[in-house]
Amino acid sequence: MIFPFLRRIAYTSRKLAIIGNGFDLAHGLKTSYYDFVCAQKEGTFKNYNDFLKRYGNGSQHWYSFEERIDEISMQCFQCLYDDQYDYNEVLHDTDQINQLFKDIKGHLLKYLRNEVSGRKIKRKLSICKAVRKSTFAINFNYTDTAELYTKNVLYVHGSLKENEIVLGYDFREEPCFIEYKMQIWSKALCRERLEFSRFLKKRYKLFSEQQQYHECMADIEKMQKALTSGQGFTDWKNFYHPAIISEFYKGNPYRQADSFDMINPRKIKTIIVLGHSLFSDKQYLEALLNECVNLRKVIIFTYDGENENSIQRKKAFFQRFCRKVITCSY
Image (cartoon, rainbow, N blue to C red):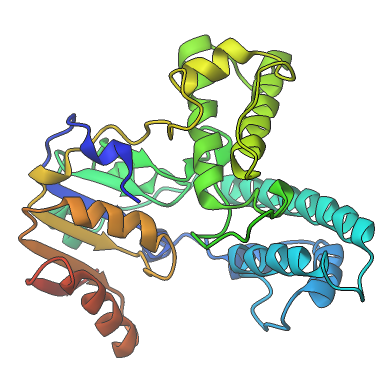
């Protein structure tokens, strides 16, 4: 899959920074899922863990929420066609799981706001040397720590400032006839809803405090449901604001909405990797790297005590796209 935004020519920086959660951790912020879980009240995740016991695979890392929602949602789909489970009960459980996951996302937003509130974060000299003001950054974090080094930042997964974040699972081959409610946490769908939310705010000055905003967000879910159902898009009669949805899709509901139109990958000569584990977002990064045809160097920042296998895995990933891959310390 080639993302439409990768063909758009806009920002022409020759340096690109790819920023993940390790970047915030290196600046002293407690932004891991484990940190988040430890800060919550006892019992916060009781119902979530109950469903995990029923539909999960027994993983010890229950707090790896994105991996678990992938696992649970697929298991729910499989249970629909298992005689040991009641069909309607599984659908009801799926609705409850989705609501619990929305609640977890809300708790995470609140936790991260508290974590960064009033914090004075110092810039690191090693990063200053690599990331200049002209560097463009693709930031997978929700915080604005990256703006200590450059203001040219794309928040791929939303941000605390927007009060909207992407929390979901990476690309997977969805089974035929899978219910929309069992794929609603696909990052591709989450990113599209985020982009639509940004569109509403910029184009129509609609915000979450307004009823019309929520009607439009309900419309985008209806559209996604229609387009992922296997039955295709039919008509606009059940939409609150069909003209707005139509404009977002530019009149063609089967065309993926353009997003991330701030970068020209063909201009990029150097990529700096700061704190991205490369366990997630692989499809996104591979699509980007395939378009970086003039890439000459990749610099991977490592932290003290990082496992050598982890470092070699990251190097191997980028060596598929660039011969010169080097490491340096924070």
